[in-house]
Image 1: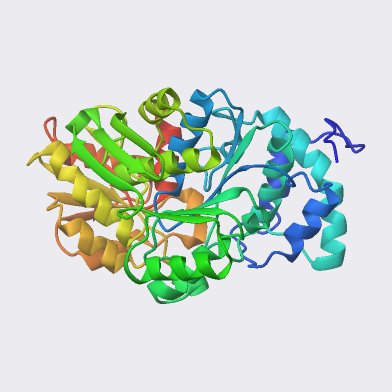
Image 2 (image 1 turned 90 degrees about the vertical axis):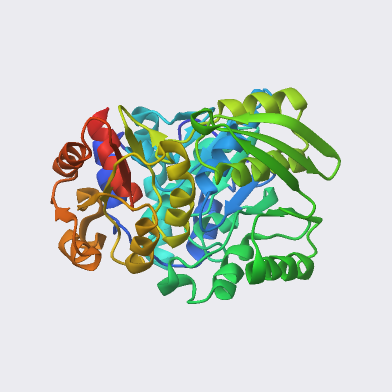
Length: 432
C-alpha cells in the first residue's frame, strides 16, 4: 500500500502534546510480545513489507554499530532510516532520516495520524506500550522515505517490538548478562532471546563468543539462514590504536577486504562494532571501497566515550560488560592522570559488578548521583556510595555532581561520567 503524507482528520497535536500522549501511555512499561505490533502495522497498511536493511540486537554496541552502518550507506548515496534506542536528549532521536532526527513538527504530525489506529488496537488487544508506539511511528514514517532501514532492538529480540521486521540482514553484536529479570539469568538464555531476531533466508552477522555464539549458530541453522558470518571466523580483523585519533582497522570477510580503515570514534571496543557494520553493508550488497572508507571515518555516536569539553568524557556504559569495555580503553587514553568519576545507574542493573569494573580504573574519587529523567528506576545514589565505600560523595543533582567532580579532579585531572544513558543524556542537554 502506498504511503500517503496525511491521513489525519483530527486536529494536529503540538510536539509537547504528542510527547505527553506517548509517555502517558505508561512510561517504561514492558509488555513482551508481537501481537499488538502486528495489529498496528496492519492498521497502517504494512509499511514494513518489502523493505531492506539491517536489524541489530545485542547487549552492547548496537547504537555504535548502527551509526557506522548508517554512515556507510549514506556515503553510498542511499537514503537511510534509522531507529536507535534509547534517546539521549529528545524523543525525536528515535526516528532518524539521513543522519538527522525527525523534526518536532513531523513527530507531532505522525503521532496525530497514528492516534486513531492506536485506539482501535487498544480496544482489541489492550494498551500498546510506549516502545510499541514509537516503533510503529518510526517504521511508518521512515519506510516510504528510505532506501534502507537500520533498526535497533529495544530489549532482547525474540519478543521485542521491532521483531515484526524482516529486513534481510540480522546482527547480534554480543551477549552478556543484562535485563536478567526479563531475558533470563544466564548468557545462554539471553542469547536465545537476542538470536530470536534471526529470520529464514537472512544473512546473520555476530560478534558473540562462547556459549552465546553456540546459540546464534544453532538458531541460524534451525531457521535456514542464508549465511552466518562470525567475528574471528569468517570476519578477520586487525586493528591499531591511534590514541585520541581513534583506530586503524584491516578487515577481511567473505568476498571482501579492506585495509587501513580509519575510525574516529574512541575506544578499542569500537573496532568490533565497525567490523560488524562493514560486514552488514556488504551483506546488503551496498558496500564499495569508497563508501566504507568514508563512512567508518565519518561515523560518530554521542555519549559513547565522547570527549565533551575540557578533560571531560561521557560514556553511556550501563552494564558490567559496557563498564569493562570503558575501563579497558580509558587509561590508554588518559594515562596515569588523576581521575574522578561521576556515576549513576538504574536500580535493576548489577551495580556491584559495575562498581567492581570501575575499581580497575583506580579513580581518585567518585561522585554518585541520579538522573531525574530515570525517575524511580534510578538507583539511590546514597546506596551506590555505601557500596563503594571511602573516597565517595553524593550529589542529588547531576549538574552539581559534575561541578563537584571537576573541582575534585583539578585543572590537570579528568572527569568521566558513566553508568546510565539517562545520566549522560541529561548532562549533554545541560551542556548544549
